[in-house]
Length: 539
Image (cartoon, rainbow, N blue to C red):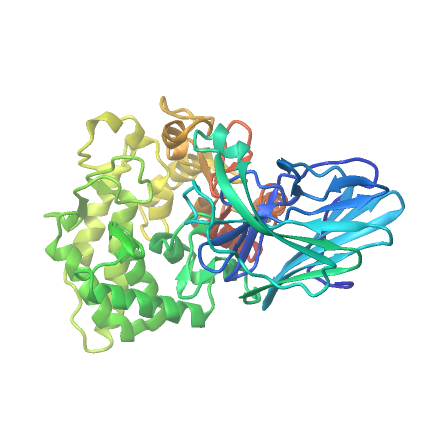
């Protein structure tokens, strides 16, 4: 590990004990997601191996001069979750190392998640190591209510003593309790190992090296929207699509084509779950045509016709705009935006424009109503401001309808009258922070400055105040078009995102930022937030 250019000393303390609850992730197929101190605070923490098996705790401790001291979470007659030794934490691309300081001795533990998954210990003389690994088997969101029946196998040839004894104990997750969820479950250990020299534990599972920033989110042919708990969300992938390599783009496009064949011409927002959202199909067409050009025309036409002919969820209306007929079909899925949302219709305009562009030069038949869509889009921009939804079917959100940031997304594709330029720039700046864009204008009556509490309270703030880093991508694109995003702005945002990558989940940007504190929150590592960082690096 010496000289590893990916090595990063995260924390060092040689004279005091500090528990570091910042999170990290290593590995591609097998993933270790935990706090830096390897003390699980949430049900998502642990080393996820062999499908639904999760190693929750190594249960490791050392004995020196007849005194037993834990290295992380450990077990004697009950479960403990504190480390009492000062230590240094080193985080590499596919490993994490802890160097523990015991008098003048150094104990080194490394967890490797690449090719072979294994844990190594380097022990000084007269130090005895005990390891008692605890496992659970469940899906990622649930909690284990009963003990495991079948042992989980691993290999270690260095152990001087091995005790096969089944132990069941309760683990508690303090962060889950704060968030209003179940906070305890049963985990099971089948073996205790004792070492008097260096140790190595080898698990019979293989991972794959992480080479690109989005490899952390890859799981076979899926691209997860966030770690550790999101599924394959098409919308999030499509927003991040331009930052993938061509091989990944081709893989994902082919997968979506296969879903279209079994899904009435559309694609769901969550692969394998749920129904079509209003924006996913349009984002797919835009990315498909940019990538395949004229080769994608047949697939694109099939998708666009599903909007023209309409479904129970959305349809093209008499003014050639797309009308959303059900709630929760846009990226703001905690808000009822039935009607004609501005960004959906901007996507619609761009999808038709690209289709016509490639159809005209390749013997295809363009759609004849592009100019009519463009004319109808002007209704969003008026003397009294910018409407988020035209003809809203939810009268409760009238005030919010003039205070959402979705016009920023739309302006990537739509060009209003030049007379509105100054107003638009001023309005966009009111939503801006160096960490992202407010999901609701701060002066709005329903603005939430806190993202805290149980699920219902967090949902109230999710799209009514919480800051979203990914919205900086359209914001910067549009501001650069207006020639008001200069080098000083660029440096400020880059510096902020560099800071964010070491704050909560190391080397990743989280889903949200809380307005009142500017702390990161929501999903710890989010695909389109990381994509935003990659985008910002290149501006």
